[in-house]
Length: 289
Image (cartoon, rainbow, N blue to C red; front, side, top):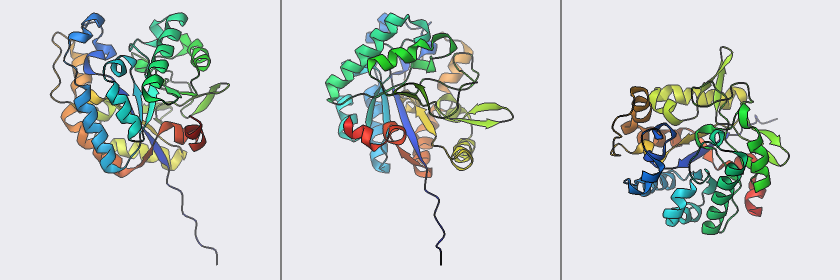
């Protein structure tokens, strides 16, 4: 008698963009880049909480780490690698790819990759553009990433948004150049449009049950791994408040921050998670790296 086959559990990719609250792109009009070193940096405290939570739930994740942070907190880079997580690049200075020339972008991603590899002793295969800032106007960025030695990018958000997005691009991983894979953050397709279902401000704003349902739909209906992301500052209800910001920016940044740590803890329990490189490039890629 044939035994019924069990549907394999789909592993989703848990990703963290390692940057601090004052480096958020929406704060750029209010916080000068030259002031960053004078700001209270809280990334160490928040990263300690995240790493402890991942260890408690026995989850390995991918950390898209800003070169500026790695340079000042090299022990964070070493902790990420020592605990079995993937170290990936978020560029050096958190400048949107869409605002850089080809030469400046090449310098930014190359500088970050070299720094992270020197600190960790491991190859850095993945890159995520700040604010998902690769779009129709700067597709040349994929050529630069390939030339720099990256194997995958997670820099396109296939939604319509006032700051980023390429709504007509593929929703799931696809080869964007020879030897380079683009792995978009996850959306749910409904009513002829893509809905964000992968973290960030939407995860803080929407009821948790809705976010969980959307990821389950992607796993069950699309039979695809979801890509979820958040930032260390999103679990930090004690971060300094930035004065003078406009109402939309204030709402987007601070909404439901006190609840986020608990929601992420629940998410880690509700789904199977893993590293980007292992899910989308395979274990052999990790071994070679």
